[in-house]
Amino acid sequence: MYDHGKIMIYGVDRDVIESINLLETKISNRTDCLRYDYRGLEVLYYPDSKKLSISGSIHKYWNKINGNGWQNHNDFSYMNAYNALKSLSKAFSTPLDKMNVKSAEYGLNINTIKSPMEIITSNIKYYRKPLKKDTVEYFNIGHDGCLHSFEMSNHTIKFYDKGRQCKRPVNILRYEIRERGSTRLKLGNSTDLFRLETIERLKKELLEKFNNCLIADNIDWNRIDNKIDHDKLKDYINPVYWKTLREKARETNQRTQFRRKWNDANKILAKYDLLKIRDELRSKIESKFDGLASELPDINNVRNTKSVTNLQNCEADEQNTKTEKVLRIHYSKVLKRNISLISIIAIFGIKKIFSVFRRILLRNIEKLFRKVN
Image (cartoon, rainbow, N blue to C red; front, side):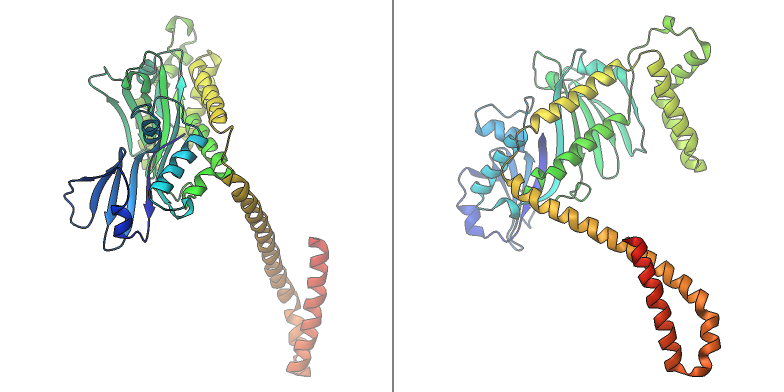
């Protein structure tokens, strides 16, 4: 499930680094840190600040230490990821809750009926949200597959032919999301990766981002006998059309037309039964995710109890905020309604004014609380 990422550990003494087995020194062109390799992962140590970072694919790392080679074309469950991080925790003498997540990549491999390379080049058309880059990249002139990535400011969505890339005789499509930080997923330390809230959030992210992709089957134009639909589909399967429409919407600050066209595209594709590949992929993504998350580490029992408490506290805070807002509004109304009364009784002196006003406020607040409860 998890793959490439970066972990930061603070307060690491130099003697701890020197005591780690299998840590290989690498040449570094930087003067502020020492560079190492630990079983395929890059390790950087900053002596002055005593910081240590570990970067790379924990999926490939787990396969390597278990004798399965440096690869990530097989499945990698949450329990596998947990055990991989526990292995690093032991090697670097650092508990999981002291291993801070700075970036994360998550995704899964799914077997497809159609060639993943054909799906990427012929069927995945465009992404609904504004993009920094929309790139199709071929590996070794296509002999090792290709990649289609949709890059946004804080994350990138990728589809690529994992089977061909890893020289496997089966169709394996890799779908993943790479985060350029940890804040969007609300990740702190490594234990957060295995909280139920995080797992549910990742599943939601994967499915929502997938739903924002326009994925259409190959079209037999002889079946499209309606000229209006025919002309619309010509535009809708053309990425240049969507790019132009997006730029126009940005310039005129009118996004309604883009949204309307996008919805119409999906409606016409469904009308002619041209969403079979999309539906197949979505179903397999969901079922594969559920399978990889079917067994979770024991840490979730502790973290989830805490999370439920936090959720209850959040709900209580939200209710208190709503009540305070209602009180402020009501107080304002009471003040306006009684301003003339205050003016009239001002002759009785300051003490009398506050005494009367206090009784009025208490009476109104009491009524309000009866309504709220």
